[in-house]
Amino acid sequence: MKRCDWVSGGSELELEYHDREWGVPVYDDRILFEFITLEGAQAGLSWRTILNKRAHYRQVFENFDPGAVAGFGPDRVETLLQDPGIVRNRLKVESTVSNAKCFLDLQAERGSFSEYLWDFVDGRPIVNRWTAMKQVPASTELSDAISKDLKRRGFRFVGTTIVYAYLQAVGVVNDHLVSCFRHGELSGQS
Image 1 (cartoon, helix red, strand yellow):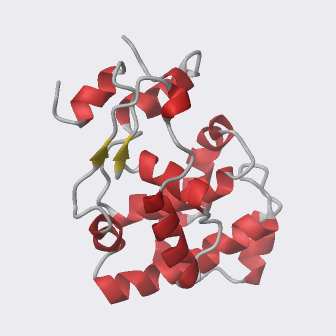
Image 2 (cartoon, helix red, strand yellow; image 1 turned 30 degrees about the vertical axis):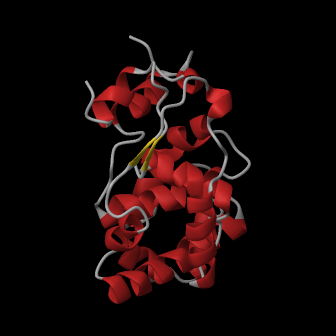
């Protein structure tokens, strides 16, 4: 079975993530909050590191319930900073809490974060037709626009490169290589 080059030689966890999650359109706000948190946590690290910590992240961040995370106070943040099961970076942990508050504000304004996000692409995933990983951009005008708007709304760890990785993860953009079995499945061409 042919997969995207980035997962070549990956662990079982990485293969499962690629085969079942990466690039699948997500409309569930809890999952969208999970991925915006995990993509921010990944900054400067490998995705493998984050995948290996993901189950623990779910546990300590209340299964990524933005309402619960928004209520985390300084004591909870300090406890998290001592937990080796997550990335113990103060700015990243604090941004998860502040991003949860921004996430709730955006939900209140738009009805859902999903509605907000998918409006950028008129509700339909962008299907790219890359044949090699070197063609896949690190950012685009779309990720620039979303990053700028999220920052304006107070979100942190949402630079354009992080946002582009987020868009790939939650299926707003299908960046599976055309040779990958998932490209056709996700673009309706299988």
